Image (cartoon, rainbow, N blue to C red; front, top):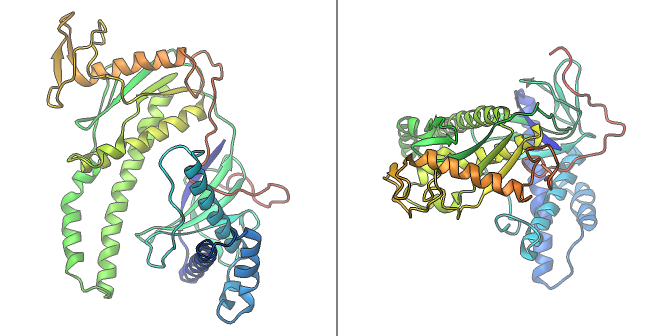
Length: 414
């Protein structure tokens, strides 16, 4: 199982310049290789192979006056940029052929130096963990890192990222074994919503923090200040960073809330069932801002990979399942109800239901049925493996072999 561990990095001025050069060189190699393949396709020529692109756009380009500065960065950065382009093309071709699940992947696009997020990817030949707690990156130096926790194993790859607010992060991909928790005799169904972020089948309600709504007043003021600045000026750049930092704070708070809530749910329950919501469709309605503020998709993704990591059962109930229309006491389908109806009485058994609690109980019953039918993709309640899905890292990472690497698990002295 592959997991990703993110840490905040604090490069000095010279290291920031070296990283900026690495970001630019990786972007140039990507654009050059993408241009060659697009031109070959337009001319009706065969698909340009990676070996040919590596020879033309990396090896030979370093010997020319126009691209001589490519030699100033690590060759691993350039090669990895080409591998990322190959992965983007593979996702595009697999999406066309129907081999790739999820949303349709479009063809690769050109990268711009004005993109707010810049990143480079490295394998173990270009980085190592030092004894003093720093991370050595080839042709950049020893980066100071804020270690929040130890790495469980030696990392196979590293991604250095600069976000829109100017922060630097190191993302390690680690191959690790599942950490199975002791078995529990409880399971739960979860109904996600806006008035309450989540309602569990046992009646527990998790209130919606609404991080974006709470930060709206300050964000509006910062965005007004940004709109008044002259385009291209240094003051506009400073104002943009202020807005980006405020958005980053909102995203960090939301992510922290999702992690803490999902971890607690996985620890307390042997099986977790949740309704598969059409978030992309709801994001185009009048409730779009509240839907994106809740972050349901990220929360469900955390539940899924944490369940696989901890040996728990996880299953999704189809979005067409009428969880809000069926009485959880007698099973009678009482018909659809508008959103403003938060409490209703069953016309068959006359039981009074809270809308969200009733939906969570129905999700629990349907999830149990799915697991009993053998369609769950995680461990069932008895611990037997039922089509266990491979859990990759959160983004596509190209790893590297562990033979001869100098990195070690964890950081000494922590």
